[in-house]
Amino acid sequence: MRKVVAQTFLSLDGVMEAPEKWQLTNDLLGEDAGGYVFEAYNAAGALLLGRVTYEQFAAFWPNQSDDDPFARRINELPRYVVTRTLKKLDWRGSRAISGDVTGQVRKLKEESGGDILIPGSSQLVNGLAEHGLIDEYQLLIHPIVVGKGKHLFEAGATPTLFTVAETRTFGTGVVGLVCRPRGKAMIS
Image (tube, rainbow, N blue to C red; front, side, top):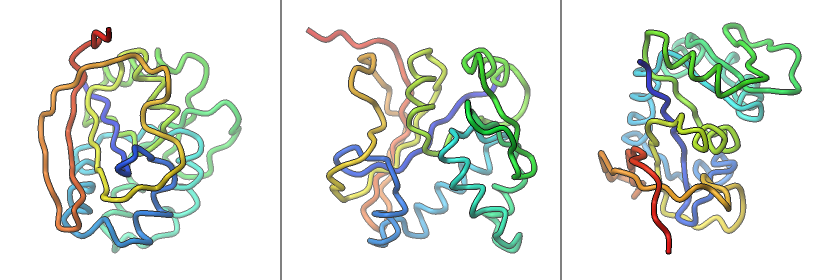
């Protein structure tokens, strides 16, 4: 069975929205953390994207040279796009998912192949988490406070305990955490 891996860039205050506005501008990723991100794409057998992330990726990645190994990998992976509004997906290798999203993700998990990687896509991650469909979170926590934006876990999320399976600190101060849900947390 494949696992669903949510990989996201986070600020210290938990913001994951628009990392291109705060991560790259402040030169926070670095080569070592970039290599770590690339490892997840190499382990992936497919990408699962929300509509907004799909639109951002589709506007950029198909126009990049295959001489860039990251661009080549992103462009060759099959992409499943959760959308209620897009009628046509122009990026070759992309397929829309709508309707019973959780049921379709469960079916994807049963297929053979590498991980199903979700880059960003906060609304999608939150929805799948509520149904117990995220097997692993790869969090890259950046040493910056952004102040506003979407958070990884929305207000009202089910209290959940995690096992920290791995930690890494990268040259720019970014901390990588691999966390796996282990069940509901008791909150008094």
